[in-house]
Image 1 (cartoon, rainbow, N blue to C red):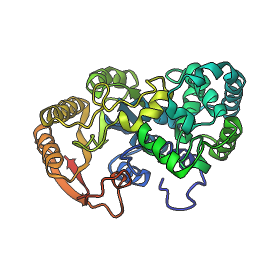
Image 2: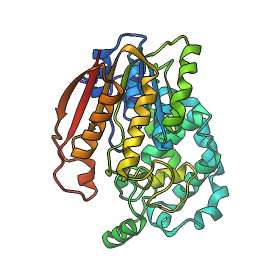
Image 3: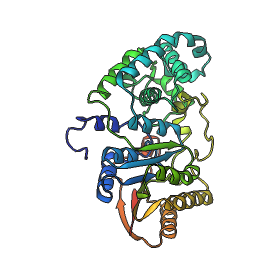
Image 4: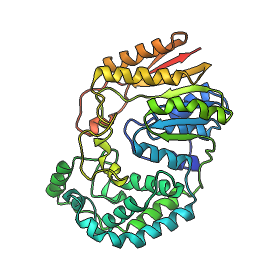
Length: 369
């Protein structure tokens, strides 16, 4: 299934783009790799799942996708794509949130000053109701709503719930406030319920994707991977046929700070910390970065079939590339290695955020039996 004609003419295509995230796999890429290296019913594993693009691609092609993601933003996106709730249930729950939003007037006035410049009063109350009421970890209706809220939480002023802001990355509060003041831009007066229902009508126009059998886990892949063996056996799945992943790149992005506003909606702090929690910084320690990759690939190798293919996309910069290459050779010494350069053909996300230095692109490392 390739997304080349009539871009949004199926449910699978309309749900594939949820949601904005850093360093996303293109769906067309994962579709092609999975189609080339697996058969129907095979298992595809991504221990650094991000927004679960590889897992989703496997699921819609009648494979079993298994992903692990440590950042709850990406995990919510993945759960909503794999297990989207019924449209009527989603709308009823949204209406309930809207009815309860007036109970959050006092709380909305106590938010940091950033929120006053970013959102209208009506939107702030609605977001606080969603933040407090949605059980997004356990309830399909609630994680579906949360994923849609995260998509539109910030972006272009006329196409989101926020004042003008980048959609992929949450901006620094002092910078954003200063910019809005200079431009004299105020938060849009938008009815959040009406806004979301219009988007839901579009999203559900062709129904929900068929993705039974796949799963994405929230947690540290070093801890989750050892538990997957029993899970596979219980489901009658003996081993993984394709390891398709892209580990975080050395010193490229801060996975907490760059998503601080979406994480706030998920219950985290309303303050934009520069670093918070395990594996949510810029992966700036070379030894720790190497140990992370070695540990994850070693644990993943225990789940692979003997004839499994390992397909890893990595950064072409010297340290990230050489570290990933050497570790893959060490963990999979019996496999035949192919290397495909993937130069950037347009501006990257880091260019949008001020880093205009020339990027060398990415590299695909493919290990086959």
